[in-house]
Length: 343
Image 1 (cartoon, rainbow, N blue to C red):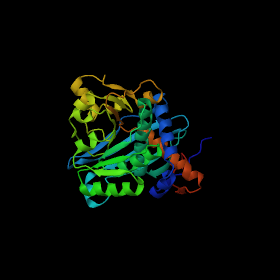
Image 2 (image 1 turned 135 degrees about the vertical axis):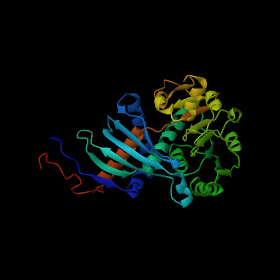
Image 3 (image 1 turned 90 degrees about the horizontal axis):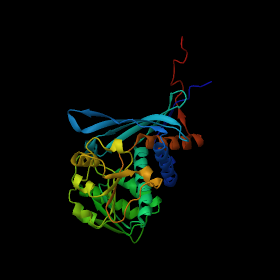
Image 4 (image 1 turned 120 degrees about the vertical axis):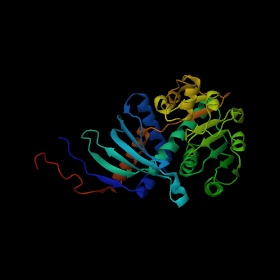
C-alpha cells in the first residue's frame, strides 16, 4: 500500500554541504540524467516563462520534468531571474526545487535550488568539456570567462574537478568590480603559477583562449565576428545568446536537446532562422557520450546547453539522498492534513 511521504525542507546551507567537494559525483549524476534522457526515460516539457510588462528584464521560469531509472523522481524547478538584484547587492537568481514521489505524486521535498541550478549547469558544461576535449585529442590549457557571476565560479570549480589544469585564465566582464572580484576568487583557488589576466575587450580574451566560457545575462548576440575563432577553440556557450548566427553557422555545434535549444531566440535558434534549417547542429551531448558524433579539431566547437529540468531533478535527488542518509532532513509535521477522503 502506498503511503503519503513526509514533507521535508532542505536549506541552502544543507545543499551546499551536500555538494561542496563532491563535484565528481555531481558530474556523474548529470551524466546519468543525460543518458536516461537520450534513452527516452525522461519527460522534459518546455520551460514556462512568467514575464512582467513593467519589468521586461525579469522573469520566473518553471521547469517541470520526470526521470525514470535510478533517479526515479518527478518534480519542478521554479527559478527567478531579476538582474536588478545585482545592483542592490543580492544575487540575480533565486530558486526552489520540488521533488514528487514517483508512485503517489505527492511532493516530498522542497530544496533551495539556486545552488543546485548552478551546480547542474557547471557539471553539464564540465562534462561536455571533458568528453569533447577527449574526442578532439587535446585538453585546453588557456581558459577565458566572459561573464563572471555565480555560474562562472561554479564552472571554474567543476572544470578543475574534471581534471582541467590551466596555465592561463582570462576574465572579461562589463563590470570592472565583478571582474576584480572574480580575479580575487581565482587567485585564492587557482593555485600558484597560473597567469590571470583581466581583458578589457572580449576579442582579446577569445583570441588568447582555447576554452571560452560564456556565462552572461546577455539577451542578444554581442560577439559577432567569426574571425575571433579562427584558432578553433572549444566554446561552452552556457548563456546561450552571446554569439551571432554567423559564428554559429561557421562552427561545429552540439546542444543538450535540439528541440529545447531551438526556441526563445537563443543563438542556435537565430542561426536556424537565418539558415532555414538545423543541419549546422551535429547532435547532442548524449551523442558525444555514446560516440555517435565526433567533434573536429579543425573548427570551432560550440556546446550550447539549454538547461534541462531533468538535470535539476538528478542533482536535487542526489542532495536529498545525502541529507536523508545523514539523518538531517527537516520534516514538516502535518504538512498534508486532509488525508481521509470523507474526513
